Amino acid sequence: NVKSRDYMKGLIALRQSTDAFRLKSLQDIKERVRLITVPGQNGVEKEDVAIGYQITAPNGDIYAVFVNADDKAREFTLGTAFAHLRKAEVLADENQAGLVGIAKPQGLEWTEKGLKLNALTAVVLRLSQGGAIVAPAVEEKPEFDLSSLEVEPEQGQAQNLVANPETQETVAEAHSQKVLPNTGTESKSLLALAGFSILALLGLG
Image 1 (tube, rainbow, N blue to C red):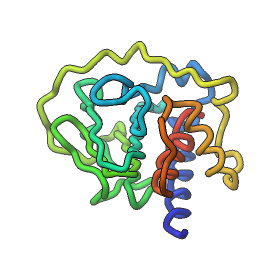
Image 2 (cartoon, rainbow, N blue to C red):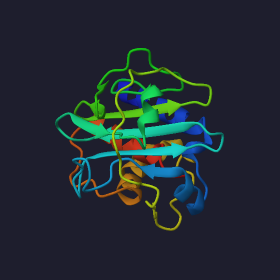
Image 3 (cartoon, helix red, strand yellow):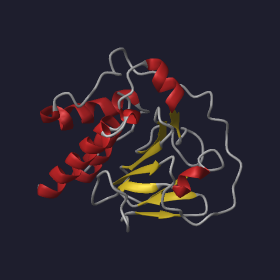
């Protein structure tokens, strides 16, 4: 499928364009990665097929990855802790992925609580130091303190996953289940696979 290949190529190019997606140590991961979708909070199940997390690059740029592998639309609560993401530009939506912000992103909408994604949709946001597309502001609401969260991947998971592009999809599918919380069920389409591939390709080393 040409569209799927182009989408994956866009993700790989995005991953290689910034150190945010190539963290080399467990310490970097602990310091730079924050989980947005905390299991048991804001409608997130203990075992879920929706996940979101934020990575801060060494140069200060902020990236956020959201994946909805559910068969229905899901809303991601940002609260005050991640309200800054409302000013981010969209680099990947349900149709395309790349290094340039998408003028009219598809498959997502900003809501009072945060961000709503269509079923089987993955999104990547970027908030550059120089600024980005600004979404409508809304009233900020209290959020839980996420500063104590720790990501504890197994030994060796901080290695570069794009060393061999030919093995991207296989590695991505397996890695997404190891590094991040249990997804609960298997994905049911190429879009869901692409979503979990984002977790691996754009995730932790």
